[in-house]
Image (cartoon, rainbow, N blue to C red; front, side):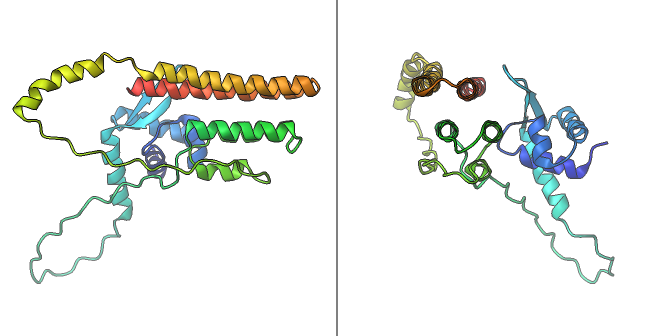
Length: 258
């Protein structure tokens, strides 16, 4: 039997993003067994879908039915306690209940470029001796699970925050034009032309992997030139590998969703 409180927390944290079971346990503050029981029942009712990953644990996402379930759970928890019955004096018109608006994350989502800047900043702090090896591993783990810019406050405690670009808000989608008979006849040819163009995701993956590898090689060369240190070289290898793994994971998600 699932816990309604855990179900509500799982649905809210899965809203608008995909999370693994370990991340859900950390965000909800519950046990792994409680989260697994809720996920099994939500998957059985088609409210949540499980998406296996090429590397790493599977992610869980809300389905359209899960979004409806989240709105329904919000109405049930927000409804007041039933009042005592009173004698009916006059019939009142029925009150139309509106669905409460779905909550959206207000913090800026951490982009791949911003994540790389933060990772490079941690590597520089370690090379300068501002943080030790254990602190570097702890901050790198927090950066790996970070989702928004608000999560960076716990990562850079006691250290300067890297200079990140201002978040860009996505512009609203333009209205769909109404095609006339002449324009609709020319539409298939134009669609076929764009369909023949190559997908830029593979090219973007190669560029991002090359950037991460170049940064790792740069810091490796600096360490070797100034004085070889096995600990620092190992830390650079871990950070560079983490950058490349995160880049590949992001590319795999975009390719699967596309």
